[in-house]
Length: 270
Image 1 (tube, rainbow, N blue to C red):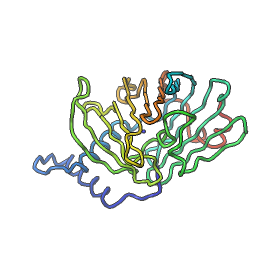
Image 2 (image 1 turned 180 degrees about the vertical axis):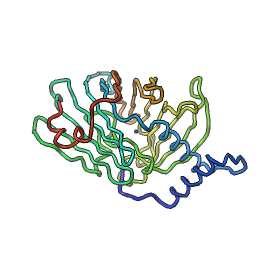
Image 3 (image 1 turned 30 degrees about the horizontal axis):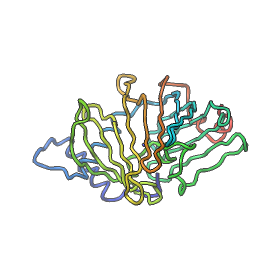
Image 4 (image 1 turned 90 degrees about the horizontal axis):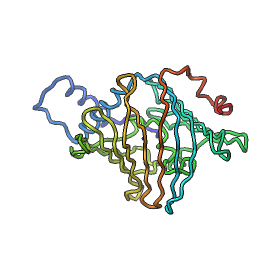
């Protein structure tokens, strides 16, 4: 759904133990909640590796606390980078006042993510400071840090419980960002035990208040392996505002490479 640090010894130790447990099959060795939370996250990441790249269309519907709505249309491109973090490019197509606005993100596993915003009215590229990652992305209820590839190394994990989620059973786990500049102290997620799909995430701010909730009503599977959301709804409990994202026209195996995710490409994105 950020940072400047290296993997801690605790994370490395938990990862090593998770791998040992996965291959030993020894039921006598019990996992701690932290080890189980990390294992669930690692399994989810492993299941989605190898997608290569994709493009998709997105409709963003902004709803204020009075129920008034405005709509924006975007085009999204994503390039997988298993050695580091994924790259993404978001370009606004409509309405006219935001047309041509584009955001480029280079996610990283352990370093600060790089993000740039192109503003066509000013004809310049603005770098998004890591200290501003908690800010609203284009007036939505999604923060800039929500728009990165959420690399596992940037969080600590803790399994909380198993519980039903609709007709499925979900792991309920908590992750906490290691970056002190994050806008969140922790996030609680509901992930189904069959396919590792995320159905809900609760976000807690720096005061540990329940700030936002993300729900994902439905998913579709692509290439017989990769699950992607059809829709996402982020509700801000403090402001009463919400943002709905409708995803369409996923296309995997597009003609994309690193040159399509440079600052030069950001300026010419249309």
